[in-house]
Each structure stands twice: as structure tokens, then as C-alpha cells.
Length: 196
Image (cartoon, rainbow, N blue to C red; front, side, top):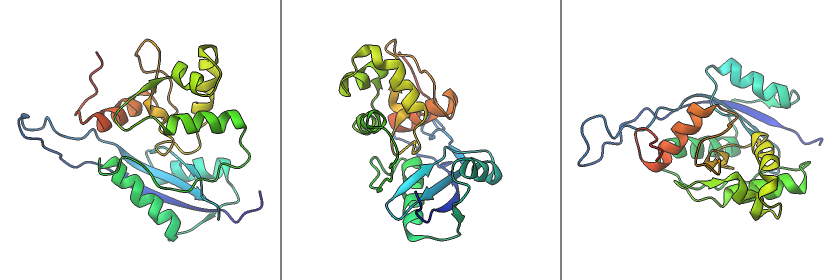
């Protein structure tokens, strides 16, 4: 893939109050999701979006690990639009991304799993077995689905955090279960995720 790749590191935070009528003060606070996100794009679309890291350097290292040849730039219209959408999503103002993706070089199984994950609506969850059924693998392919979701190059846009275990519990997530919990709480409108 000899495309000219470009990268940007952005800072994100959603530390804003979304007080709701009828809730006690502080109960309507969005779960805090803050940090630095790395973005990498080709001329065809977004190739990578890292989950929030604790520092700009950590996000840059994640980008360089997979795309050492990407040129780090300060401004790019496409990447700035991706950044705008990511920030709007984390603020609870965007439910569906409209970003072109460049997932060339991936297997048909990976693409099918990620496409199924993108069909999970905002604020809802599905199981690994559900995804496996969507891609024709049956419930026995749930582990393979989990591995593919763990290698998702564009989390948030491909919302792998919306996939849970058949037992209703949260299972693996590249950003850790705490971040998965915060993302699900953000989408559910809860200050904290309540699992029943």
C-alpha cells in the first residue's frame, strides 16, 4: 500500500454536564472520556483511529507502531472532519459516523464482522454470538468474532464496545473494560453503566 498516509493526534474530552430534568445535581454528568487519539488516513479514507491514550506521546507511539511511514500533520480537512465527529460523538451529540474508511488488506471475514458491528444501533448492545450469526459463522464462531473485534483499526466508528458476552457481561475491549463501560454509559445516557 503505497498511498501517502497522513496522521494527526487530537486531544479529546467530554467533561461537560448534561443535566437532565428530574435528576439530582451531578446525576446527569456524562461519563468522563478524555485523552489523546491518533488518526491515520489515506486518500481513500480513514485507516486507523486509536482509543484515547493518557498522553500525546502514547497516541503517537500507537500510530507509529502500525504506520511508521505516515506523515504527521497539524491540519488536514479530512482528518479535521474525523476529529470533529469523534468529539461530537464523545459529547453525545453524534450517533452515527459518516467517515469514509480505507480497510484494504483485510480479510472478508474481518470486513463482515466490522460491518455487522456497525449495524448495532447507538445505545444498544449485541452479543459476540449475534455477530457470528450475522456473518454466517454460527455461535461457534463467537471467539473468532472477538479476536476480529479486538483488532478493529477504527473503534468508535466500528462500535466494538457495543458487543457483549452471551451472559450479558462485558468482555474484552482493546481500551479496557473501564473505557467500554464509559462508552456504553455515554450512549445509554447514564452517568454510570447499570447492568441488570
